[in-house]
Image 1 (tube, helix red, strand yellow):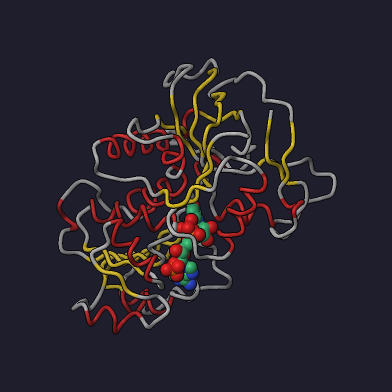
Image 2: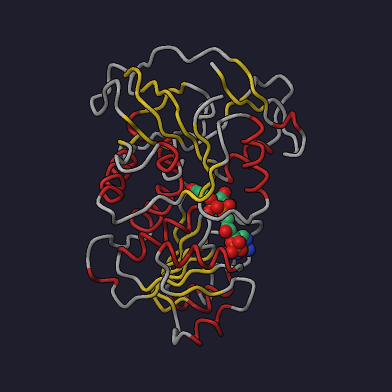
Length: 341
Ligand SMILES: NC(=O)c1ccc[n+]([C@@H]2O[C@H](COP(=O)([O-])OP(=O)(O)OC[C@H]3O[C@@H](n4cnc5c(N)ncnc54)[C@H](OP(=O)(O)O)[C@@H]3O)[C@@H](O)[C@H]2O)c1
């Protein structure tokens, strides 16, 4: 089968950083696995981080890619939720071969049915970042998707135009928050508004006076989706007593978790989207449930795809371009690739 592989950890401007290769197709699925024919993929910062991670010279070529949509071709004996022919979307498991290949084995418990109203590319844009935003807000920070208690409360989303921010804005608005997103350019600010942000402020400028100008003295919850260290101090200042902060980016150094975090009883919540799959947690099937619920919300018109730019078919040159754009830190929404040459 065709696949795009990484053989060595190389900078993205090196043509050998990602290569087209014919590799053996995976065998028949066992256990909870599905065999999926991959039709579209999206690309995330984790792909670039994995590509840059040091490798031994003996390590076999690695297939990256952790956002896909496609069609089920075969199911393992323990699969009950899917049958051959079903259209699906999923992020998968960072510890297994990824989706930049024509066929992939993936555990059915982290797979959802694809929204019927989206094409394969627009569906592939969603899984990884949607699972991240959903798990962070509703599983880790214990906020409520479907009740009125957040009406009048303020959610600050730092890095609003990124893949995770684009969905976090939509989910926060759906949950009833007044959503303030940050963006530093006119195009990314417009995108945040299109995703549903009530207000957009600039993360390249001091945040407190911009919030004060909106009449907001403190925020009830904040998502730092860009740089844990850089916004740590200002979020301690901005969060209301008993507020919540959500984190997804590994800090560069130690964080001072005492005052004002302690004095205000601010709770700190980590999300790692691959934790359930990596540790095989007993509630692994929650990702199947979240993706199915999100598919229903998309089909009902309550959430929208975050796809922004289509980069062509799935091949090494187009994936290198996707990595290059992601490494620039200026991607808006999601980059997608669909079909095979
Ligand atoms: N823990 C997890 O499970 C998990 C899951 C997904 C992602 N992540 C990590 O979370 C981060 C964001 O992921 P993503 O997919 O949303 O990335 P992304 O799509 O590449 O984010 C790009 C956006 O980040 C904004 N940005 C760049 N520098 C910023 C800064 N200093 N402050 C605020 N915003 C900034 C840019 O907005 P402007 O152009 O407006 O400046 C741009 O629109 C990455 O580090 C990723 O690896 C973690």
